[in-house]
Length: 136
Image 1 (cartoon, rainbow, N blue to C red):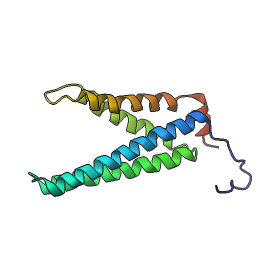
Image 2: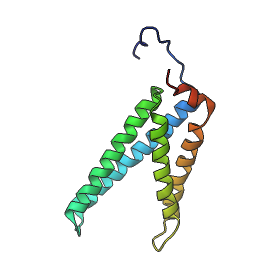
Image 3: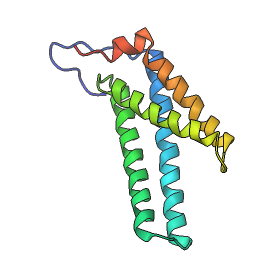
């Protein structure tokens, strides 16, 4: 653990902030799994567009990296994570809602995406998380 900056006391991490960090970490791990599966599929299955397949793999890897950065920022109580995590959860909600409808509906994937997104959004607006991530 690193030393707090001079003149800046060490803040205790609230339990709800740790839970939020755990949700973001689980999402990051899931995104890494998705990136690996997409890469394996690109390497083993015939693709209609190699460029499109590579682009999707790169986007998945970047998303996993961004989620890891948000996890790190959440653990450290950085103020910027509130907006970043909220934005990611909105994207995840949109994908979840899309998973419930259409010709290729996958409600199982919809629930897997919807539940952590709702939990994370609820945690973002708890007083202890807001105070822990407030700019000083």
